[in-house]
Length: 195
Length: 226
Image (tube, rainbow over all chains, first blue to last red; front, side, top):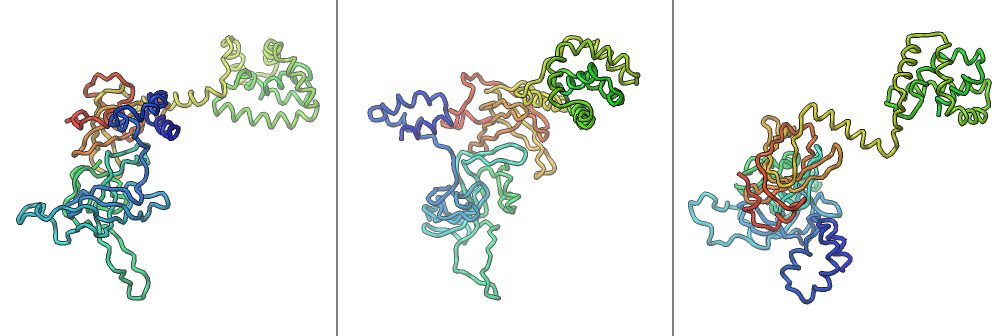
């Protein structure tokens, strides 16, 4: 475990690479807080099953845990992908007041619901065609659909769902312009800031 | 090495077959030294190599030719000049001899390991003419105007503190950090990218590091720039 930590450290902080051996010896004794912040810096990775994401719209959900990633393939979802998630925490009922501007819309999402969300911010860096990279400090989704019973087309084939309409009416925080290529134009128009 | 082969044939075997080759040779011998060959030269070299190989088989064994090459290396200089002057003069020949005599200090050979460095330098020079890049160091607060093809119209503006600068020739990048709408955002820009329309250093903050990754753990206040 010490070697694994050391290798992870050397990616991000080469200064500590040499010191990590000394630290691992001290890990038992010294104050846990200091060690936690220095040694637990991880390489940012995909959004996969179990990842907790912030819901950054006013759909009623606050925290969503990823269950499955649609286009992510085996490794998981990245910025701009759609995931299936379960709402772990939702806005308490008391917060919603009548007449307030950001009153939660009718299709309010409660804890335990299975929802579809599009990842609008990811801690994993996303490369762009011009050679630049963008990364955010947190993982966030905008909820674009709720799971319902399978509806089939009239000819019996499986209906393909396109998730482009967010449930909420507001989006908080910056949004990358990858949303344009992912056809999430409504989210772009609602966003406060486009990165 | 090819040039030496030519010299060998010149100095030792002025056969009638060789004579018709000679008008080509001066152009080779003028830059016989070193592979300071930029592409146009290289193409000419390759052409004449084919030519040489074809007629080389007529009158000389390849092994023997190589031996001549070894001998001819040092003594070649004086001999080629003499030979070249004797031969029927085209415009190219005259120029070649003049060039040969003028640059008598030998041009240093370009080694394989230097090529990427030289290519990068050239690419940077070309880009600097289009848009000069200011001196950017870690800790500078910069403003970047970027043209994004997806965004059509206006230029996007990115402001923030330079967290790090990675030098890699033409792909030298800087990493900008800023708190946007409450969330920290880091963007890596290649500074010689043609999409970047302007880079301006707004101010500077004193830092004692080359990479400011500690800013990620600090208060957002330290990464906020109006």
